Length: 329
Image (tube, rainbow, N blue to C red; front, side):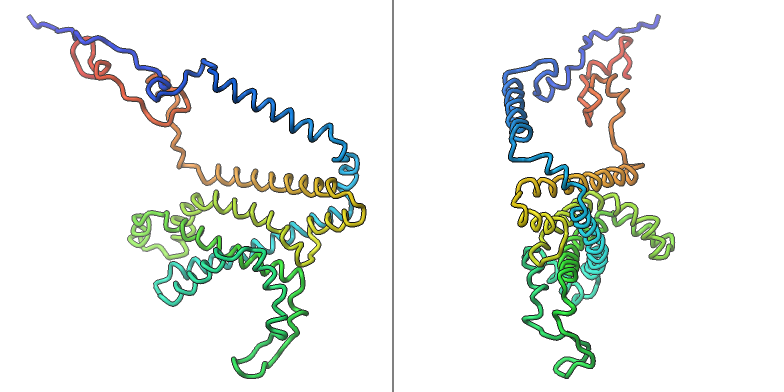
């Protein structure tokens, strides 16, 4: 008669995740959490008192200037400057990225020198150097080196505050985005490029259908940060006299002597426009993350004793793998 042996191994329950990881239990509110909560409440009270009950903010004046004609024009100039600087900066960054990835040593050296120069020089210094280029070179023209120009123009007529702002910001952004583009393309595995060559796809088809979408997924977070930084860097052009948002508010408080309310108006607009950019970044990340979602299976996690937010499995005791009839599951 066939004997069925029952397993004598006792069945153990899977310990909670917080015990395995040495974390405090979710239901326990310990002393450290109470201290943090009290500190947060105190800071909220201090900031609320500073913002609401301090009459120096002059909130009615802030509201009256928030949508005034001069402020709105400054906001428009800021957006227009950001769009142009981004367009030219991204184009320069793509060219520099291609040079950095080129097989020609001369192009790689030139691109590396450009990136090094941008990284080592503050954007404010770049703006001032471009704006005062007329001191170094009174005329700009077309011609051969060491020979008279065929066509020439006064430098100060070409380098206006707006031109200096666009060129300076684009020059700075190009060096930053060149490395972002390069890291994105290098993040695509060599197997993908080898598969593209094996299929005989054209370079353009490979870029738009295979390697490009994968690189974009990697590029979006750092590139979006650079876009936000570029938008805020437009405030630097106030030193060259271009009437963007910060320059407009400076000219206003120079006449009405309401420094804090005018700067508050500028901060509100910067916060609003930056929030719009961040929302766009979130939408792009969700779109290009399709097919790459590696979140854990919530149902399986609950069956194994895991919480829905734990991204890795917890080791299961060996005794759980032994069935009551002696078989292995």
